[in-house]
Each structure stands twice: as structure tokens, then as C-alpha cells.
Amino acid sequence: MAVTDLAPANIKKSKLRLDSSKMSFTDINKLKNLPITPYIEEGKENDYYIEPVQIEYYIPKESRFAYETKYLYIELYDPVPVNDNQKLIMNFFKERNEPLDLIEVMNNFPQFIEPIYHSYNTHMELLEKLSMEFKEGISGESKYGVRRALYLNEVLRKSEPKIASLEIFGDYTTYNINWCIRFCNIKNIHHAVEDKTVEYLLKLHRMKHEDENRAVDERFNILASIYLDQAFPFHTDIFDEDDFAD
Image 1: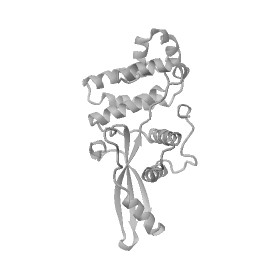
Image 2: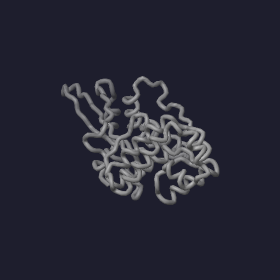
Image 3: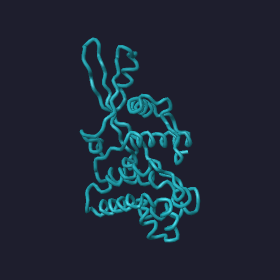
Image 4: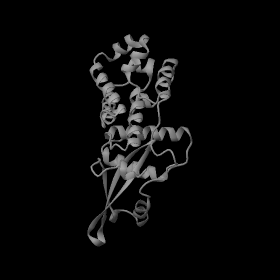
């Protein structure tokens, strides 16, 4: 899959200006020599969110700027159920390769209608809209239904967790964000999430790699640092606390 298919010209780009007069020759060369895209194991291409990072170099001897775009590949990690209810619900949708649609949770598991409604009574209109976008996107009725669902899940994630998600179905917004990204990758639908969502996906990536004791990925770390410095220049702690990511 060509990276350009997933990174259109109009996609939001992170840009960091690097003054080569303040950097060592080795640092500049290290940045320039980073491959535009990383090696991705065959068959795993759709399991990444791709964020373009544009680097602007100032070359004093030539009194000009040079530009390069590298692509930050963030591996997607799905939430793990932590109780029997979460296992029941997540496995139900995973086995069908479907998004975790709370309207469908209530349709298929009526025993959970009351606690779900109690937690989400002020969000029901949004959840119904999300369910509609999922259905229209999956059926092909709307080409961009799943992309709109992706953005709705970003909005919903900001009010999580709730009692019902903790006790019944788990981190459904992360599950759905990942599901939507994979769907958009497979269908070659352009998509770009908010900076805070990218930050969150980076946090999950980092935690997963640490838990699995994976080797340090220098390319990833350099581009992630550039992206975060630009997106959140005034943060002292880039990775904010997140209940579902702990």
C-alpha cells in the first residue's frame, strides 16, 4: 500500500523548523537519512495510523530553507477487556469484525440497557448518530460514514470513562477509533485525527512497546519527538494521564 494513498496533500501536517546552524552535522544528516516510511511487516500495513511530519531545514551557506516530509507510523493497539462483561461485549463485536456500537450493544444485550442509558442519557443523540454513520459507511451508502464515525468517537472519548464503560463494555472509543482507522486504510479513505488523539495513540504505542520489551525504534522516537514538540510546544509532560491508557 502506497503511503501517499493514506497521506493526501491536504492532510494536516506537523511542521518543525530546524536551524542547521544550531545543529551538528551529524544531527542534520541523521534526520535527512531517516527513511521516508519505515519497514512494515507484510500484511500489517493497515494496523497503523500515519501522521505526516514536515521538517523545514535552514541552510545558512545557501540562505534558503529546504523541506522534507517523513511519515510517522503509529501502531494501533486495541483495548483489553478486564472483566467478564467486557469480554462478552468486545468478543461479540470482534468476532463479527464490527465497531462497538452502543446502540447495537443494547439491541443484542437488553440486560445492559438500563445501566447504559443511565450513564449515557445525555449522549444518546450522539450515539444514535454514530450508529447511523457506522451502518451507512459499512454498507457503502455513504463513502465517508466511517470517517465521520471516527471523528464522533474522538468527541465521545473526551467524556470517558463512564460507569457503564468501566463495568460493561470497556474502552469502546479506543476500540472504535482503531477500527475506523483500519477501515479507512483498507478502503483508502483519507483521514486525519486531532493532535490530542495522535498524542493518545503515541502513548498507547509507547506503553505497549515497553510492556513487550521491544527494541528501541530510533526513527519512530525522533519523528514522534518532532511531532509532539510542534503540536504541544508548551507542555512540560507530553503524555497526560488517561484513565483508559493506564
